[in-house]
Image (cartoon, rainbow, N blue to C red; front, side):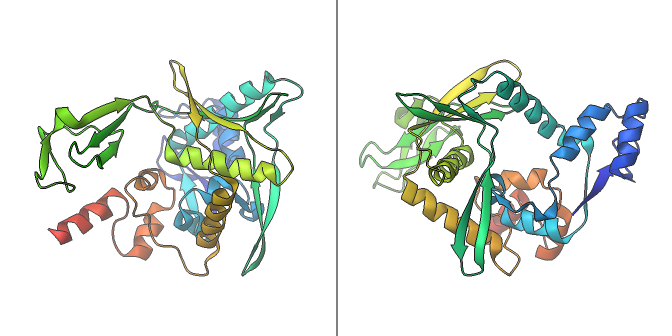
Length: 302
């Protein structure tokens, strides 16, 4: 459970009330927080009984469970990104049309073996026009999505590797043909940026939630914002039946009676670098988590 902050100036625990008072007085040397920023960060700390949300369902189940079981503290400077996101969302909401749906929380119930589970979600913006209904989500980020690279075997047409990471070696190993390797520059294809998978899944679950309230969605779009510009990317939404299966699977992971395991998928472990309960997680695990855990596994297989 959230207990307070770790002061950016003294590196000591401090209560939310004391942090607010200090920020109002001008803050200590080494801290740049102001009272409104601290209040915004506190607003983002939901009470333990808030229930499951689309956002938490797509985050690490182990983290969400440990946040309920152990006391944790945040450094205001490391939580500032949540306040920056609030500013952007509030600004966008202030300038939307009166007939559009913005920042409204929707609720649905899912029947599970443990009983009915309440799930809520708050889509950023839903455009409702005669021609179509479009779901938009804004993402404040330090780094916009990069172009997509795909490396394809010229013999079989099978994908060797794809993603935003470039292969920087002269040769790329190919498991799909007898030649075993290809000259990298001859099999690389570049495509426009794609939405991050986690963000795209979030929109698909929002679409499912809206469908439960009789609001059909035809299109989805994510708008990424850094300090320089916007990047609008269309989202290929999951069919509703697939989104339902995803929802059920994620709810099962978050409601299991046992502590869920640490994240292991390479595309998910970035979350460990920003986890407020990482120390407790590693203590329960008996070793490192995140990238360090994957490195240990790779060394054991060598």
